[in-house]
Length: 217
Ligand code: AMP
Image (cartoon, rainbow, N blue to C red):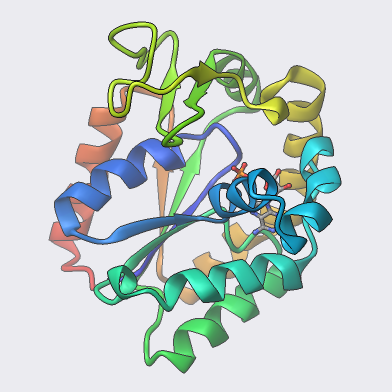
């Protein structure tokens, strides 16, 4: 089963992915996480991607594709992937289709999570992430139990690109490059639109109800 989570930064893709992972035994693959790892490990791709990421711009397609294609070759992806953050432009939709086709697979469901931009800006300003394992938190709706990460005890930090001027740029980039993907997948008839304002658990319940009713895949 292969899912794609679509939605602006801060729409709650990561939170839904975490729940889907547990229930369906499939893995979330976030190109943002792969790129952040590449940057912190100072790899060739990381060095090339760093400036774009700091400005909230898209990283070149071929660099992201390279990381993604290596990641999905790993065996934990055999039973399915939740794609988070890729594709982000129309060209990347073709790259993903080819990548899946080569492996005899296809997208079974695209979930578009819709959240107004003013809510996103306030959400991202309270978003935090664990420096160690990457687990996401929100200081208002989903805070850690203590000062450190609940999962690994790591330090909890604000991502550089969650600072307000960069967030605004990321939302502009989303509007221009990623929003057209909604029409693209809607035409293919494999997309569900979710209202992403509300409790994580309620949104997830609505999503899984749809998955069961429609017998996806
Ligand atoms: P995210 O964690 O998904 O918000 O991604 C963080 C940053 O990584 C983005 O602002 C982009 O600079 C870069 N990035 C992540 N995924 C992609 C992608 N599919 N194409 C280009 N750049 C990406």
